[in-house]
Image (cartoon, rainbow over all chains, first blue to last red; front, side, top):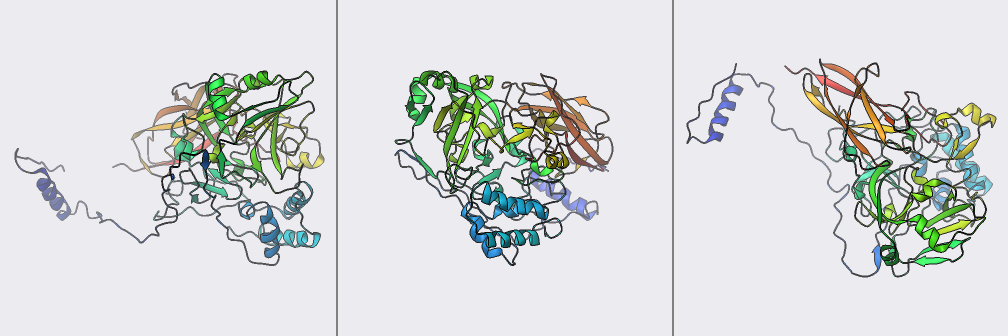
Length: 143
Length: 403
C-alpha cells in the first residue's frame, strides 16, 4: 500500500511529512518504530590533541610517550616481573603475547638474560618463569 | 554483529571487542588491543606502550596512501627520541669510505636531487597473530603496514659522495633508537645491514617527506630509509648513521633476528626447527598480498543490493596484475578492477561490484597475482619468527532479508 501525497505548492513540506508519519504509525505499519535508545558513556578515555605550541626553534617533537600499564595477574613472582622485566620494556610485552607453552616462557626469560644481557639474578629469574607459567600458558591464561 | 567494526571499542559502542589472546588464531582483521592516543597520531590500536607499537585500524586502508597520523608504529628498544634538535642532528656516512661525510637536513634537501617513490612499509611480523601454533612476538593483526609517497635523496648518491672503498661487504644503518642493555648486545642498539651487491640499494631513498609532509617522530623524523619492496625491518627510522662495513653484520637484529627459513614461502614446522635442519636467511622482499577493506562485516547487507567491494593489494616483487574475488569459499573466482597505478611497490586499490543473491552467510575471499606470477596460496605459513604471512584473506558477510 502506497499512500498518495498531494502537496499544493505553498504547503510546507515538513507539515505533510509529519501528517504522513502520524497516519502510518496510527495504522500500525511501523509498530516497531522506536525512539532512540541511549545509555551513559564515559568521556575522556582519550582526548583530542592540543595544537602544537608554536615555537620556531630547532626542536621537533617533545611530548612524552604515554604509558598504559596492563593488568597483571596477582601472584607469586609478580613483583620480580614488574621490577626486572620493566628494566627494558613495559609488562605489556607479557600480556600482549598469546598463551605460550611453559617451555616457551622459560626460553623467553633465558633469552632476556643470555641474548639481551638482562641482569636478573638466577633466583629472581626462576620466580619470573614460575609466575609466567602459572598465569600465561594455554592451560593457565585467562583471556 | 558489530565486533568487527572499526569503532566498536570506542566509548559508548554497543559492545566492545572482547579480549582474545589465543591459543587459537586471532579471528579479527586487526589485533584486539584498545585505541590509544600517542603524539602526532590519530587513535591507533595498542600493542605495547614501551617501546611503542601501534597498529593501523582496517578502515584506513580504503585508500592507496595511508595517512601519516594513522601509519602504524613499531620500535624495538625503549630509548625512542622524544625530540630531535635539527641544529645538532647530522646524517653521517662513515666506515669503510674514502671520505666520511656529514649532512644536515638542509644539505640533504638542497645538495641532492629530490626523488619520490610510493612504497609499502610492512612489518615482517604483520599478521603474526594468525600463525598456528602461535609464536611469541608482536601479535599484529593485518594493520602493521602502510603506504606513503616517500621523498628524499637516493642512498646511492650519498654512498657515491663518500666513496665506498674496495673490499666493502655491507652497508649498515643506525637510527636514534637506543636501549638500556649492555653495549654490543641487541638490547643496546638496533642495527640493520644490506649487502653492497644488493640491487635494491639503487632503489633506496633517504626520505625526509612522507606523503609530502615531515615524518611523525614515531615514524622516523627527520629521515628514514626507504627500501622499496622489502620488509620494514630495513627501513631505519631516525636514520643517523650510514656505515660501510668490510665484514658481515652479525648483530642480533641480523642474526638470529629477522631470519626466515630458506624454503618455499619461508615455511617450516616446529619439529624441523627443533631438529635444527632449517637453513635460516635474512628476510627480504614481501610476498604478494590482497585485502578486502569494505564491507568489513560490521553491517548486514540486504539481499539483492549490489554493493561495492573495495580493497588494496601489493607485492614486494613488482606490480600486482590481477585481483580476483570469490563469494563461495574459493570455488569460483571473478576479476576485480584495479585502481590507479602508483608504481611497482605501492598499494593499489581494487574494487568489484557484488550482490548477495539471497539472504544468508557468504565467505568472501580475495587473492592477487603479481607481474612475476607470484600468487597467494590458501595454505597457512609457519616459521619461528612469525614472518611472511600471505594466505588468501577471507571475510564473512551476512545478507539479510530485504522485503
